[in-house]
Image (cartoon, rainbow, N blue to C red; front, side):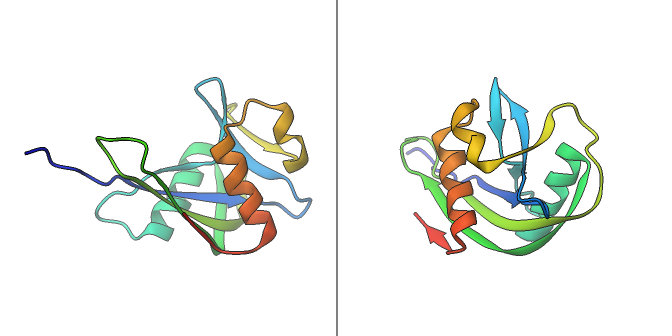
Length: 129
């Protein structure tokens, strides 16, 4: 009998006062800052910590974008909890992090999943897949 594990990740769509979104470079493209949640941390704490670790930017959680799943993976039911946030300090400390204009995402190597999460964040509604 195989065991099915759910990996829970926490991420944040961070928008600054100019409307720019914070992304990190990974695997030849851009993605939202986030990481799997350690069992010892609450999801919002894990999300804030991941943003700081990946970008150097300190954020405050301002809401929930939604809950996203990827049932296409037979070995794992991935579950991503994505929050809305705003920068409250720090500064970009990694060449891998960048502030980008959301309307330019279609011109950049950004996955459809990342664009979808950002679009749901911008429309202000909470989304569940």
